[in-house]
Amino acid sequence: MSVGNQLLVRNVPQKTRAWIDAQRIQYNMSQQEVVLSVLDQAVDYGLELNLPLFPNLSTIVERSVPENLPFTFVDLFAGIGGFRIALEKVGGRCLFSSEWDKYSQKTYKAWHGDMPHGDIREIKPADIPDHDILAAGFPCQPFSIAGVSKRNSLGTAHGFNCATQGNLFFQLATIIKAKRPPLLFLENVKNLRSHDNGRTWAVIQETLHELDYWIFSEVIDAAGWVPQHRERVYIVCFDKREFKQRPLFQFPKKPEGRKPRLDDILETAPDEKYTLTPHLWNYLQRYAESHKAKGNGFGFGLVTPEKIARTLSARYYKDGSEILIFQGNSKLPRRLTPKECARLMGFDEKYQEHQVVSDTQAYRQFGNAVVPKVVEAVARQIVKILAEKLVEKGCLLKRTEVNNYRVENKASK
Image 1: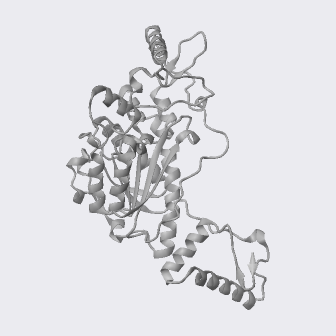
Image 2: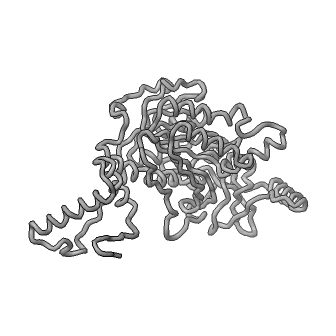
Image 3: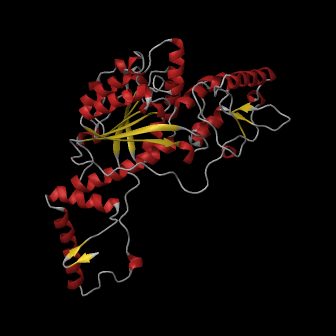
């Protein structure tokens, strides 16, 4: 719409707005000054060459955002490296990792080539190299629905009152305060935001605000990427000292097109040992019936191959009850194989084929893992912001020496 010599422009693309904002900050100009300057230069260019400004709209090439940019990251509470797999795919280089579980360390070493450092409470922040992104799927057991129910029934503490796991967030905060990474990329269970009537989430937000970070959070269901309902809260934070204005960050949308189904990931001839015994199947049915009579929702999850699964949990090794595969009326249901669990979580084939721990430990590891495809989708949105930072400053890092930083991983020796 135009009135006199004024223009009102609607629906400005996000990346165009971000570029205008970056130019405004860099050259200390108003939005109007930036836009008019660009338009004046475009008009002068056309007049000088005696050319129409848009001779052929089909030849206009939209400025693309790179899919990969070089950056460094640390992988804390690393598990089997789901964050690492995703971040490396978009240009990241891991400088440091930490994981206390010895079986997860074994898998991490086999998959990624270096042994993570151990208990994060025993690591001095000064021993962690400077980095661009701090990635952490900090422990979720004290905040999870299942974990809270279990701890309530046992009369034990949960949330920040859990001395062994809940307070690890504050250990993370100590590292953030000491290292001040430009970005934080965190993951936890959906229940984190509602736990203790929202007080746990309020404390986390307050802590991150006090550390001077912009905070973005969203619950994402992995069902758009893998055949599994798996809702997790993803938290992306930007250092306000580096990003003076709140970045125009957006979480990814679910992929379009056909949704993944279980028959996409099932083996054609799984070992018979994964089929339930009559005794276990009868037990699970009786257990479900007894809880149904009491009005509880507990029970097994029997699913056909054309559907999607419930959330894979770390307790899957016990009886597989939350995801049982229907094998027809003439055969008892079966649990997923570890290879199928790797596929269900979206791990690439090279990881599916490389199991170095027992089935029990593999089930635990996949049940505790992040979905790399979801992490990658979020990371690509982060890369868009890094690209704008590159336009604004000419570099991505607060500390350029990080590019040449070489870490000798003592735990791998």
